[in-house]
Structures are given as structure tokens and as C-alpha cells.
Length: 322
Image (cartoon, helix red, strand yellow):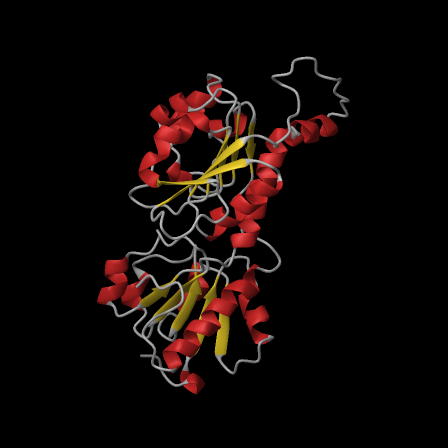
């Protein structure tokens, strides 16, 4: 499937991550280059056997990369890749699932704590040099997580670790997953994804850590917001399209839920004209949940494992998609 190691060319294509630099430290013997832009990738597209990529990938590239046989996605989400296009062109695909499980679960917990402790407001007050007074209204004061119920939508590697972190804060955890027979990941209850709306009224916190699929797209819609507690918080570390944004804007503007923390949005970067920027009690981070100093190395670990499998003639890849 792949050429011999001495003839194989790997391209790391990303606008910011230093993959080639980190890869060189492994002394693996592979020829590897870095493309920082679409133009740089297109300049060498006829030479590449293995492509490590995320945002720079477009499905049209499959037809213009004759030697390409394996794509290692930099992200856990693979909704940007068309499996039919890859199959027709004889290209294998593996995701980076698990590479950012620690990072994203910790980011999700950070967002939850930020909402509970009103940290975005504190930062805003700091820039204004404003010392906020004590709050008499119990419904608007800083809160504690102990005793709250968190609903984790997507109890995979990220959601499972978030479940364990949540238990450390003495929360009750309800997890949703497609296959409820594969383990609880520390959750107190595990339900199917189809039960999402039936368990919403129980949740103080709704944390989205699921992949974007036909089943999850727009699952958090106007009906879902109407079923949530007025005191509930929504935390999205999944994909922007899991939430119907116009319904979120309407719910937050009308005060139907108490707060939202978003690491992802439907359109990224989020346009300056988006109403999301001005929503009350909303905290936005720029899709940085998985972006830590360890991320390149975590993806490279998966890449090297899969290259080893292919060299040994194995057909199954780690995190195989195609």
C-alpha cells in the first residue's frame, strides 16, 4: 500500500502546529515536510504519500494527490472528510481520537468552573478596574458544583474523563452514549443518545462532548432549550453544529437558561457580526479545547503506530475511519 520507508514522503499540513519540528525529534527515518498554508500543500501535492492534516483539507485534493494513500487527521472529528471520495481514490483515513481527551475534558471542566465562579465577569470587571460588591440575591451569586447533576452528551474518551472529573467535584453524572453496554466511564447513570430530551429536565449542566453526526447535528434545538432548567448551563466542547445557534441565541436572550460556555461555533472563526459575542452570561473560547503543548506529540504517537501497522501489512488502523 505504501512505498518503502526510504521513499515515503510525509506532509504535515497545519497553519500553526509545529508537527515537522516535533516529528524530527523522534529520529524515525521518515522524510517529512511541513506545509503552513494551502498554497504550500498544493505545491507538493503530487509528492505526498502520507498527509497529516485538519483544516487545510478539502475533498477536492483527493483527485490531485496521486500518491496519497493515508491521511492521519489532526483532529478527533472527521466530518470534513468524505469517506466515498477517499475510498474511490484508495486513501485510508484515521482520526486523532483520544489525542486530546485530557485536554478537552480539562477545558470543559474549566468552562464549567468559569460559569460557576463567574470568572468571565470578574475578568471584565478587572479590565474596568471595578471591584464588585457582595451579592444578596442567592440566584445570581457564585455557585458550587457539589450536588449538581451534569449530563454528558457523548461518553467517549473525552466525556468519560469529564465524568471522572465531575465525580471528583461530588456531582451526579448522567452520561449518554450510542452503545450503553460498553461501560459507564464512572457515570452514575448511562442512557442512550435517543433519551437526550427525556433527561434534560434533570440536568444542572449539559456538557456536549460528542462527535458531529447525522444523529447529533442540531440536537440542541428550541425544544431542548425549553426542557432545560432555567438555572442550567450549556457547555459545548463538541462541534458548533450540535447546537442550533438561532435557538441558543433566542434562549439566552430570553433567559431560558442561566449561562453558556462555547469552545466551538457553527462558523469558525466566529464573525464579529455574530450575536453570540453579545449574549448575556455567555463565555466563548476560540476552539482551543484540545490545543495544548502536548498535542503535536499525541497525534504523532498515533501516526507512528499506524505507519508501523501498514508497514507490517496490517489492514486495521488505530482510530480507523476509512
